[in-house]
Length: 392
Image (cartoon, rainbow, N blue to C red):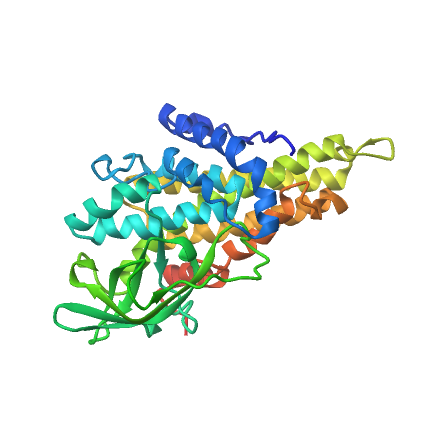
C-alpha cells in the first residue's frame, strides 16, 4: 500500500483568494481522503465495488449537502466550500465524488428547495450524516440528453399516486434508501416524487461490467405500479426546470471535482518525471516532458480561476446555467487530457494500479458524459451567445 504523497499545485497563489474557513474545510477533506480513500481505492476499483464504510466519513467532512442550512443537518457552508470539498474528494476518486454529488445536489438540494417543511425535517438530517443515502432518477433508457421526452409517469389514484417507468445510469441506486424521481403526471407535466426503498414494485438492479467509475455503485430504478403517498410529492417547483436546477448545482460540483482528478494526475506525473532516470538524467529534464508538465499546470491554473469566479457568482446568486455548463465542459475536458498526457509520462507504469492515473482516465470518460455530455454543454454555450437553439 503506497503512501499518498499528493501536494496540491497552486501556481497563481489562489489560496490568497480563499478565506480561513475555506482552507480549513479543504484541508480537512484533503486529510480525510489521504487517510481513508487513497489507501483502499485502487483495490475497490479493481473489484468494482463501492467502499460503503466511507459513507460516515463523507458525512463528517461535509461531503453531503455542505450548503444545506444547519437547522436541517447541513453545515451551512458557502458554494466555494462545497466546490473545494468536491475537488478533494474527486482527487481521491471520481466515483466517490459522484456519490457525494448525488447525495448533495440531486437529493438533498431538491428536497431543500422544492420540498415541504415536513419532507425537509424527515429526510435532510439523516441524509446529511449518511444514515440515509439517496439517488436521482431522471435519465431513462431512451431519454438521456432529451429528458423532456421521459415516459416515466404517475397517476392520481385518489389517496395515492401510482408510478410506472424506469430510469438508468443511476449512481447510488443499488443501496439508496430513497430516490428523488422525476415523472410526468396525467397532463404531461414533470414533477418530483420521493420514492422509498421497500415500496412494493420498486427495484434497483445493479449495472455491471463497467470500465469506468468502477468504485461507484450504479444501477437502474424500476417502477411497477408503485404506490407513492401524496405527501411524497415535491410541490415547490414543477416542469423540467426543477431537475435542471438540481443539475446546475451538481455540474458546478463536477467543475471543481475535475480539477482534483487533474491535480492528482499532474502531481503523480511530476514526481515520477523527477525520479525516473533515462539516458543518465531524470526525464523531467527533457523538453517534451517539460512541455507536457508546463501545459498541465497552465490548464489546471486556468480551471482553478474559472471555478473560483463561478463560486463567487454562485454565492451572489448570479451564476447562470450557461456559465456552469462552460465550467463543467472545460474542466472535465482539461482533466481528461491531463490524465492522458500524464499516463504517457509514466510510460508502461501508467497503465498499472500502482498509480492513480489510469483509474482517473477511465473515470473521467463517464464524467465527460454524465450530467450533460461534452457536446450538449457546448450547445448550451452556443444557445446562450447566439440565442438560437441547435439541439434539434
